[in-house]
Length: 347
Ligand code: XUL
Ligand code: MN
Image (tube, rainbow, N blue to C red):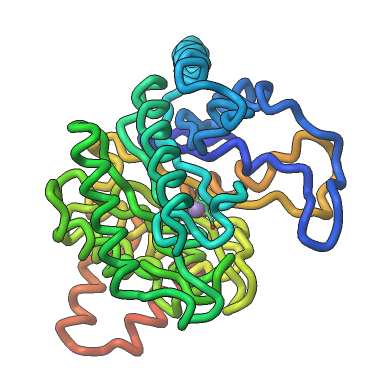
């Protein structure tokens, strides 16, 4: 079902995957990377999330000029298909130079690599017409806390943010916090950390956060509260809606699949605060099940989008007068029961 909505949805090409995991290889025939863009519109998606090497495959083998030429071509292809590039993120967790992290690596040469790659990422973003880059600080952390000077690491991250803001006077930086995986001890684990960096930077208006539901849950936090915190500071650049079963590995399950009530509260906070009215996308970061047959596997994206829209309806029919009365009466037992009945369509 491709329900209509005033929201614009996005996902990244990595969300259409071949099912490999750390314990086994691909389980589906490879779906051509370039062919994925043609799938978006029919599924009700208008925005594409990118890593730098999703835009320019084999980025490491190309000169900057060649990379930007390819990025220009991708920008035109997107335009022709009526698609919008939402953001580009530097993939700073694959290369040999990022084994110990990029910006916070103890090696000056590795840090120089991270900065070079970030500059190219900003240039790629501009070349495809994207107004933002996303920093998911994958390996900026450690497995052994004594291995890095945390104060210095945070100073380096602020310096990086300032360097990007100075390098390009229009680009926005959306920091995607995550408390663990791949490192168990990650820097910038929550929205609070990201927003503090924004305010400490030279251009706070251009530094925001991207809140992923699963990352908030892994930090032991409520995703809707993390979103609300950013909204209160006018700093919710985007969201990665998905779900997560407990404090286990990063699962990227379908939105609402584990905790429907928490999903409702995320939609509630977005809808009530006009999220999307300034062009923000409802981004999904959901993983295809390894067990799913066929190629390409896209049902998880369609299901998560549909669930979001069903919850928008639930938000519209949520009886605000009753909610206010119950808040005024401090009858939160009744409020909880009403909310659960509402979600079950039992009232
Ligand atoms: C990692 C994650 C990434 C970012 C983009 O957990 O969510 O896919 O969203 O780099
Ligand atoms: Mn994400």
